[in-house]
Amino acid sequence: MQSARAEIARLERLAQTAPDRCAAVDEIARMWAYAGQYPETIAALRNVVALNAGFDIARDKVFAKLRGAPQFEALVEQARESTPLVRTSQPAFKIAEGDLVPENLAYDPATREFFFGSTTKNKIVRCSSTGTCQPFATDLGTVLGLKVDPVARTLWATSNSSNESSLLHYELASGKLIRKFTLAGAHVFNDLVVTQTGDVFVTDTRAGAVYRLRRTSSDLEILPGAERLPAANGIALSPDRTRLYVASFGDGISIVDPASGKTRPIARPPDICLANIDGLYAYRRSLIAIQNGPMTPRIVRFHLDSTRDSIVRLEVLERRNPIFDGVTTGVLTGRDFYFMANTQDDKPAGAKFDPLTVLRIALKPDTE
Image 1: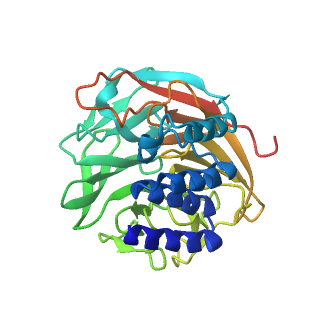
Image 2: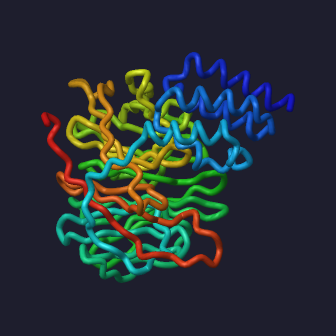
């Protein structure tokens, strides 16, 4: 209990200064629950719900022992009332192999095919827009990030095993492995982005860092200044190629200079929560993000100012869709955003999987 109180005191101090205060406030409530101090947990949850930041406390397993308690259920209802259903998507297609449990998908604009990486079957599949799939690459580790390089006609992927993380480069047409870049030890290569000149930036969730692979190099290099991004996850490149946006636990979204690695938190109104972002995508003068975990799973659009350094407005594009069951990442295809509605990444052993459903949101221009 003494260690829990010390951590809570640290979080309370952090909540006073953290760019993404909502994450610290929620973590305080979670720490009280871990410590089994339920009156203190309820008091802390009142602070979480009062933020109206999008947390769904009923989803968080750490609060399971409070379920049914009148005070807790009242807070659950309050949180749900403040996060009503929003649906702007249309069905795109389904994949029968629902137990792929994909973490990411990519899109080839030339063939209009989608690629899905499996976290359970150690493979990548290539699928048509009608849901017909065929193997693309097998005998991999846990596949997380996927990106198509439409200029070079190649596919980049991240693969992780217990003792190494790899960045893989494939020919799109044949599925032939061109190159493999591996780091051994405490790494988890997560998401990645490919520049128009063929350079690759990849997040390392375990190390809290961003790596760069130059098109002409055979060595992964840590991006100086971007090695302190806790749980670095989604990554996006601004349309003018001057900014990397990296989702992480501490600051929500950080802006990283792709040349120098200089890093700073993105500016935002205090009532906009950037916690628990998985997929992150740059679209015109905005960022599309998927938030999950203890958040009410949602797809949001953060509208940026003219400098692209500050968020000025939050728009919820999709929330509380009844088929949501593990919303993780998506892919931009021009003005459309495709995302996986039910990766079913939390299914218990032996459970039946439904077909994987992909939804499509038609994005409006920035001026609308």
